[in-house]
Length: 249
Length: 248
Image 1: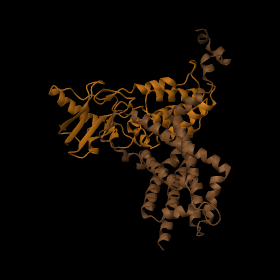
Image 2: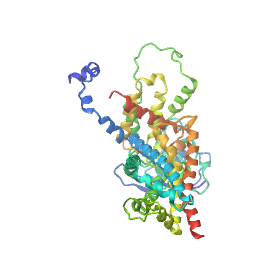
Image 3: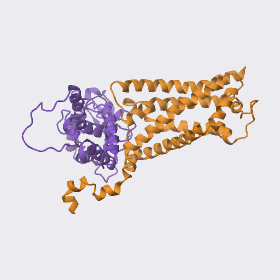
Image 4: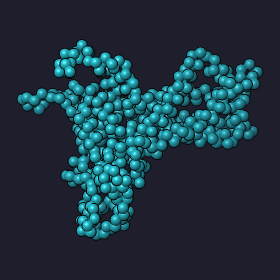
């Protein structure tokens, strides 16, 4: 297959950056999107040009590293798929593919398509944890949790923090990510102890990182490679507002 | 500092200086957070939704076919009753708050993405109305200014002729306006804008409040769509019917 690639090139965070056109021929339809970029990079390296920088790690859809904004959508055209699991057969031969970094004030560009998603780490550091005493291992079924609640908490916990929600949102809002991280703990007994403080601190950090506010378009949930449900945002609103009203400080 | 090292003892007596300084500032913090601003949009929006129902039920008296008797009596009641007058100040305030907060949020959200995408496929993941609430809101605002100038201002501050019962004859002004095809067309177009605004805004307001439930959310969404069709349709039908009546 042959593709016309329009790729965002930016030397560093200070550089203005711009699009550069590449023509790539001989691409197999069974290649993943990242493998296609690998081929391009090999060719660029042979020509002594700077290869396209992009984030990747596991390449099996669970680490959340890959982060490209492909033809107007994060992780490309498929539902519940990360860029590494997107294959070239999803595109038509001769197609022009526009590849941009995830765009957000909270995700500064490091180089080309690689962005700094450290804002997500700082949000987790603000409250996305439970404080437990170390000691003997508790029995697996000591604390009863209903299957429905366990499943819901698990759905929230499958968030891989890739940032597609931020990239998809017209407001560059991180509320699906924060909602999922608040939900996965708020739903379970172990997380209930710190739930108020957690919601307050994580939302405050989210705002401090410069992400936008939610308009409930639902784009985040549609584009999420893990299918994190939109109800996580409503739960976060509930957790945050009730924490603000009922907390001691 | 001392009370930091023995934090737990002092927190129990609320002696932490940070706490003493806070008092009510938590409320300001809450309402200026991203979620707090959404809450304000949601609550003011829901108030305006209730207002639409009241306004439409009053408007239907324009179709009473009694030469405006019941409509003029109703408008007199609405402008002179002290309870209604008090609520109307709340209404003006909530309309302004809804607009101001939308501008604050718009600016914040714009600044959250300093460099925009070259290619953006919004229709792949969201409804057109949900992405264009600002434009739809502006259409409603323009309509509101024209509407208030023509009817509300005339009723409050204009010198209207009196009808045979001694009430200000607002019906006359309204029926004159609705005999102008361009005015009716403007009215209908703006109601289409309102319909799209409501089609997203109704359910969105509940989501911002934190309402999400397997049983109720699907109903809220369906009810919101029905509301977004029926209410603007009712508002638009009245000028259209009055225009047709004015012809014959």
